[in-house]
Image (cartoon, rainbow, N blue to C red):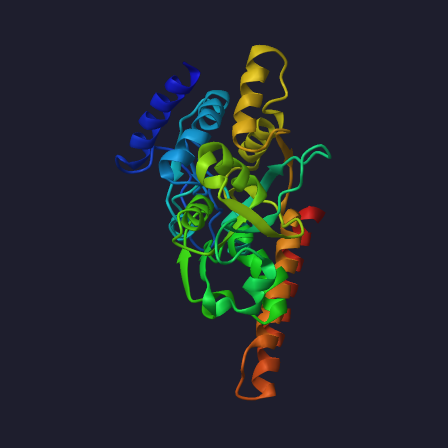
Length: 352
C-alpha cells in the first residue's frame, strides 16, 4: 500500500515539475546583482527536482527511488519531483541546463558538476565491513566461445563489447584504466563492435547472445540476478576491479546553506529511527543498495575520482600516437594542470 501511494505522489509531483514555469520562490540561476548593488539573498526553496542515474530504465529507476523521494518531500514539507532519464548524457545535459536541484550521480558526473561550480557533495553511501565492496566486473557467457579473460585480452578484435557510457565509473572508466589500457587495448576502438547502455542492458546483451563481453559491477549484477535469474545463470564473472570511487549525493551549490543542512540531515538520519517508520525506511535503503544509509560528505569525497581520471588521462596520452614528443608533453602538462586544479578545489571544500 505504501508503494502504491508513493507512486501516485511521484506522478503528481513529476507532472507539476514539467507543467510550466518553476514554482514561485524556486531558486534560479543567472540572477546577478547590478554593479554596486548588494546581491539579493537566495529565495526560499519551494520544490526539489531530483535526478537519478539510469538503472534498467526510467520506469525501474522511478520505482526504486519513489519511496525515498516521497519521504524526503514529507520531511521537508515540499514536493520532490523525480528527473529520471535513460542515459547518462541526458542527465548530464539536464544538469547543464539547471533542470536538476539534487542528484545521485556517478563520481565522474559529480566531479564534472562540482568543477563547473553547479553542485556540491552532500552525502555518500555508508559502507560496512559485512557488505562486500562495490567493484567493476566483466561478464561473459558460461557456454560462449569467449569464456576466459586470457582469450579476451589476446584477441579483443574478435569480440563484441557491451559497455557503459564514458561517464560511468564501473561501466567504462575503471575497466579502461585498470584492465584494458594496461594491456594496450582502447575499449572504443579495439573490439569488433560495441553496444553502449545501462548495466542491465549490457548484461542482457551478453546473456542473449548480442554481445560477447560486458562491463558491469557487483551491485548491479546482484540486482540483475534477482530480476533476470534465467539470464543471469548464463553469465560468469571473468574479471573484478579494485573498489572504485563511490557515487555521491549532490545538491545545487546556490541553495541556501541552511537548506543544504536540512537535506544532509534528512539523508544521514534516514533509516535510523526505531519502530515501524525506521523499518520501512530501512527496506527502502536495501532496495537502493544502501543498506546502512548515507553518511555526510563534502567535495573532498571526489578526490579518488580525480586521481582515477588523472591516471586514465596519462595512460591514454602515453598510449596514443603523436606527431612528436613535444605534442605528447603538452598533453601531459594539460592533464597535470587539470588535476592540480581539481585537487585544489576539492581540498578547499574540506578546509571550510
